[in-house]
Length: 358
Image (cartoon, rainbow, N blue to C red):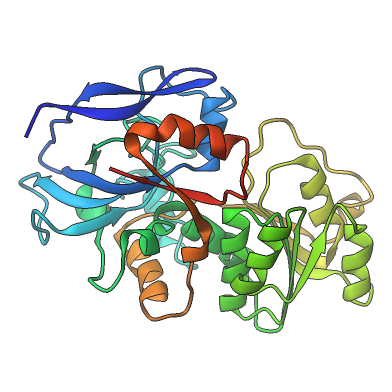
């Protein structure tokens, strides 16, 4: 094996480019995986635009599918050549915050390290997955074998957007018979819609302004689709619910307008489950918040990680409960990833997710 690899590197705001980097040297608790497929996330676009700061020279990406190349001596139960994924969030399971997550009665989020978002390491604090090889830290806790009956593209959504979208439904505590509105039907919003269906919602209302995304949301479980270009969304949702409002509103875009609309359609005692990545301050309108007396809950979620979370998500796909393959709309080779970034960041040609193949 050569000692250099190709990687997508953050150069400066507005520039992520392919360059050569040394293949990582692994420690006793690490694994080296050869990436076979990865993708670009909306968070990567925030990094590209300089809206989320990372170190110059960092390899970007946090959604790895690959094959084990090397294992540290302490990593047991795996073998070289085995197909695996690792969650976008790869917690150590040793920090105070992470152990507190794990001990929570609801199962915890399995997301955090020593500080908020501390479990998000790939493409944030260490080199990420948009490369030929990836070092996976704390591999014993974070590597999850891919079932033989699943392709790379079938499991590509598990490390991040499927886990994040499902987390929005789970954090909202959706119950059988609930009415749920999901604001924005990008990849995470579509997974939140699918999660709401699996959690037992009786009426799922999907909101977006792209016809193709509204059509796919029907496949994911939406019962009613609303186009914000044509409809007064708040008025329509209140009409659909007989004026009662929704039990759970999931915000999956990260903008003031969708956050505020999600708050305005909640019933008294309802939950706003926020998944969007916000790049500016939010304002909570007094009327929408019922002056703080509406018994509303506002909860945020960071993509749960760890091998057990990944196993469960792959089982959902393996047993036919959900098909996320319609989300992969474009495919690129790693060496052409700058073209993929240009397409994805400008949301051209009906793009939802791109598969980046080594």
